[in-house]
Length: 236
Image 1 (cartoon, rainbow, N blue to C red):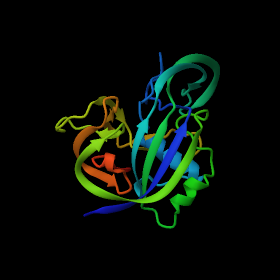
Image 2 (tube, one colour; image 1 turned 60 degrees about the vertical axis):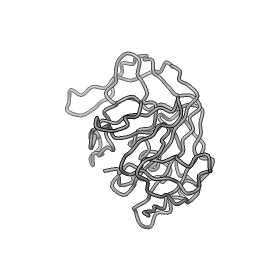
Image 3 (cartoon, rainbow, N blue to C red; image 1 turned 90 degrees about the vertical axis):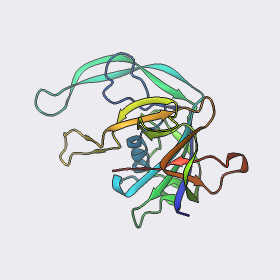
Image 4 (cartoon, rainbow, N blue to C red; image 1 turned 120 degrees about the vertical axis):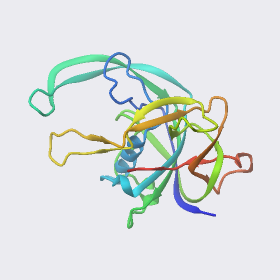
């Protein structure tokens, strides 16, 4: 039976927001669960340095109590000179945010010499889930074992979408990258990598049964969660 060693991180906050890429006008919606670039940025913030995407794998469950809308001030950017330059023109836009986020994050570290347990217990940066005002608290960090499963019951998470999935989980479909490549020179634009369709699953009606590759079950779960599994995403 295949096992993984993982770091289980419990995170809670007051608000969170995961802006849908390319949404720039009207009400700016939030993806209902964290995206993988957001989670990669969360780890990098805690480390205080860039983390190679190919050296890490994630799984998570996410819960919120509801959603709300807020107004925020934004600056417009000018790209006429071939690189971004902030304009003096400002605007007000309406954005969606998530209330009372609770994140259970499972991190598999493939980068030698990095103690992620220590990183999450003593983060270098201020951990957030979204923008700088979405500050969160890391309430628990521990090493666990995870066992590979062929199927199981998932909560609210982010799965790669495949129309042949059977059973098909309920959720909203988004086109998202798994990571970003950042420019080596100052002033360049980041480039999204491995853009694909994902389904943000919902747990409003309880857990959903799925049959999928890369499903793992934490060995520290209680008896009443014996069918629970976590999808582990390879970050490329």
